[in-house]
Length: 526
Image 1 (cartoon, rainbow, N blue to C red):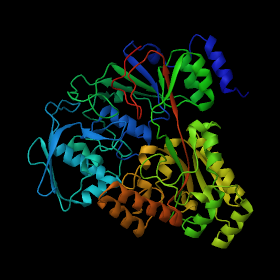
Image 2 (cartoon, helix red, strand yellow):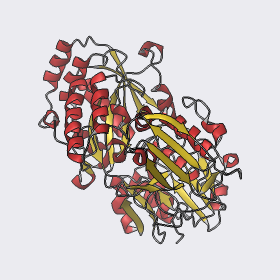
Image 3 (cartoon, rainbow, N blue to C red):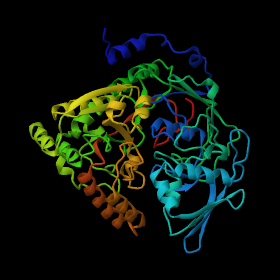
Image 4 (spheres, one colour):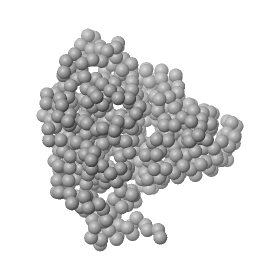
């Protein structure tokens, strides 16, 4: 029997309670009950590119600088910095009183090791380290960068809130291989991770770190300013689907749902649940392709497929038809941000001509090779994106194998470089927050160094990125980003497939939820 979302919600309105684990029902009034968009597969936010891992990271770790909702950075773990030697030496001073969750002091050498581990995985960090001759800890509180050339974006790199954020860890953890996930969580952030209460696929628990020292200045604004915690515990409960989570909000068994289906917003508003968009930059979406394997190792085939991309169809599948919640067409930078432009977007305008696309693909050399499409079936947004992608590829005449998998399995499989016959893959859908596509330093998919899934490699892109980092002003940065977008439409590192804005929902009476992403300081009980 098929039960609609609305039927489920109607039943929830009269049901005494959902059948959730007793441990959730027994929580005290100082417990915030939260429904993440997906299960926390990886607890190492440096290893993982999943948004849920980044959100987990901000619970338990801290960063040297914070970012506010206007994308401005300011000191967080550091009290400040001094720049000298013609802008080629930066001395960052740690605040007093910082402790790891195991009670040890946070030392500068911990942060040096953490910066190195993060920079091995992050494009912005790699650019920063390329300009660094020496990174050292001359004493317990000083982190010193000795640069080969000025790098004025250093605080922006160390304060980014996008994936992968530069979280600080104890040296013994940060010294481990960045390409293997950590299994232990020890941070210095406002919450401790309760590993013994974790139920993989169902629950993750965090407890307030009573010895955390918030900043004394500024105001709470996303990851910047004082991080003051008002709940003793935060329990993340993974729900089988978003509609179940909406019902749990109505029956007051849950307090906050990270992402709420657009079609259920009217229902929630009638029941007194607050809905809101935390980040106007929304989510930017992509069809990722594998540059190592046929057929997408052929740039002519990638270009030929552009004619099949209907961004509006992708966004309608996720966010419905209301234009308030979607933007199309988009390019390779988040729309509405300084680096975005209209360069090349005409290719997405007008009706799609699949007969022409089929002919163009054949002329480009497509010979019916199997296209293994990875689709996370338990993702609220990525599942419909995958369904549209499968239909589009089939209409274009491609031989599609739909690989519907759990999100965690998709994350693992997309790291494989082997051919499809040996368990590899050809394409996959993904959604990133707009902040992940702000510029060529932060958008890892545009790195062109073949280090991220998709394995895009381009010397031309690397040269343009270096030019952007050295640009003297905003106008020059924007000019270079127009060139980057033009090159992207020639080389196709991935296919942008639209932007949508995603509401969150929480019980009325809860206050203090900050703009940006889901963070849990400043939030006060009803």
